[in-house]
Length: 119
Image (tube, rainbow, N blue to C red):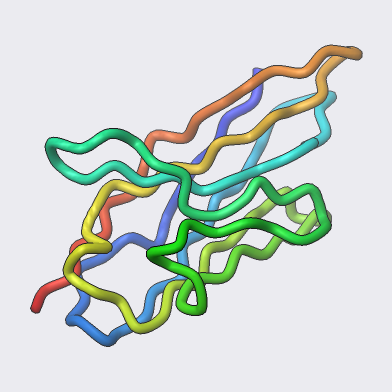
């Protein structure tokens, strides 16, 4: 089993910044790709950044130029640096990973971290 734990969510004013972290833990695994999603109240979950397999990542149009996904393979951690935050960025942010275990790929979600941006 692999666990993904997000952290870093907070209440921030518009124009501020936050850095989210997602740490993967478990045994006998390696991360193939990892991405960040978000879900605002009453809306569907959407891809924000990723997937990152160590190469270039893609971003939702709404966050391009403001958000950056990065990865520390040694720490099994992925980050989401969010700058110039807007009230419409308010959502629960989730990381999602495709993980190799025992020759198979499994998909995992974290529990989410709340980001609230005040106007």
